[in-house]
Each structure stands twice: as C-alpha cells, then as structure tokens.
Image (cartoon, rainbow, N blue to C red):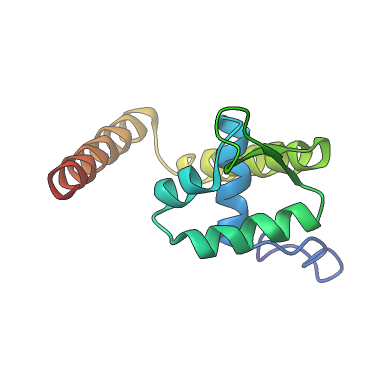
Length: 130
C-alpha cells in the first residue's frame, strides 16, 4: 500500500481514496446511510452510490433496508470489510508514528496544537457557510 511495496504486492487489492474513507467511516460508526457518507465526504450522492456498489460487489459492505424509512438503506461492514478497514487504520497509525518520529515530543505537541487550530478554523468556516 506504499510506494516502497515491492511490485509483487502492489495492486493486489485495488482501492481509491473514497473506498478508504467509506470503509473508515463505517469502521467508526455503523450503520450509516449513503447520504450521510456523501455529506461527510463532501461528494455528490451519485459518486457515493458508485463507491457503495463497488464495495458491495467486492463483499466488503452490506446494504440492508432501514427499519425506520423503507426508502433508505443502511450500510454495514462485512467481516472481510472490517478486516480491511482495520488493516487500513493500523497502517495509517504506523505511517503517522513514522512521520511524527522525525519530531521530538515538544515539537509533536506543537504540531498537534497547530493542526487543531487549522481544524477549528475549517469548522468555523463550514458553520458560517452552511
């Protein structure tokens, strides 16, 4: 999953960023509706529909009809989808630790503080525009 991965392991499982984000969102909270995923990722529903169809076809997520709204479907990770979502999350954590290891503890804290400020500003702008 990295550029350093040998050719024999590259592209064994093909994903794009939206696949990763969708699996990650379901890993964090399920069930979710496709419309919730579209809103969270800032993409149009037709794009989410394509992502969901692809992941359902691959056996990574399942769709069930909502009990509250018969017109809506809820999305869940399958066992295989959960394994992949956990593997992606674990790799993300390993990558983050590797990148942050270039900084000492104080610099890591300062970076997290600065990133927190950026996130706060983005959230404020979204609130103003939304």
